[in-house]
Length: 458
Image 1 (spheres, rainbow, N blue to C red):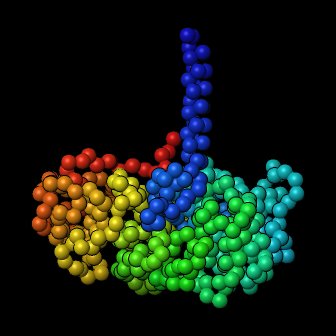
Image 2 (image 1 turned 180 degrees about the vertical axis):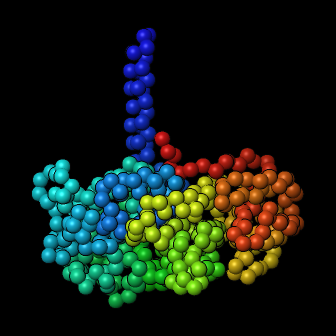
Image 3 (image 1 turned 90 degrees about the vertical axis):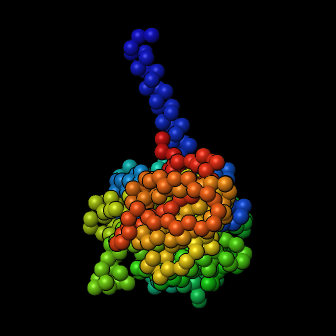
């Protein structure tokens, strides 16, 4: 075979592999609840860890080039979801409005094919592009149809009829796209329940031509400071899983907030869709400092080990895409979030449960050690590196392999094998300010998986 022919064959094979990988990356676009209703899984039952980023103004502020850059970066950093509101603003980066006469029952769609000139894009051409780019990057879009009906009604004519019509339009348009529908938008549903029900009904009908909430995944984003959708909507048939917003605090017992939702009946997954943003003023008060990477990690590990099905990161400059957002995408905590996802996906995911009984003592909030376990492994998060005592014998195996996992670097430090009985005191490698560690115990008779990423990048 001559060199030219060989090069052509190799190039052709590379293109086939690239296309196949891209197709694989876009598959499993629909999510559903796991059989135990604790987690999200793909259509084939594979675990899906919801690692989100708040990009609320994505559809309003970014043009196509910027949106593509943002989505590619977040995918490379291991995120699986970007949360964005279609109407965070009433015009997009090209000056286009979503509705005719501010009527959500009348989307402003241009007739004919998609124009080549960006200045001629309608609002929905641009939204289509962003959602398609997210799919190509293996990302789901946590899509808010509107940023809070109570706020939007000041300028948009929402009624039950128009809310349902808008939901039908969106459901039909994006039924085959990797979309998680998020109603709400930083507000309580109280007083507008019928409008949200109408929109949810419209989404379901748009997706499957009937009001079948098993075919569409819908949740609700509430207002801040430890509110949860479960307070008002837990028994709604359209609410697939609960969302919380725990605001921009420090040393706040978010593990209790997640636990409250975790134990509600009927069982539904829960997660924090807007915790403390990196670099945000603590409690909106600069005198208290800014949220740092350690604060972000602490909330993340506390909540996931308390039973959350995922976690949403946010940055003070990114959610509105303020000046400097591009450089900010490399903020420390943004790069560290993948280590949490990789850790929980490296062990059997669907049998993990929170279990504070594994820890023999209690701590003040700032030092709270949280614990979770599966059948043959256990995780313990120590936010300040204080020593703690573990009750052994709760997972399988005569002996357990102990390791320290560094949530800053995603690396392990071996401790050794110990008998799986009685109690044992563990002292993290370092302690003090920002010295958080995860103790990982595995049944020594089983070979644990190494941390892996999701989705698999071609």
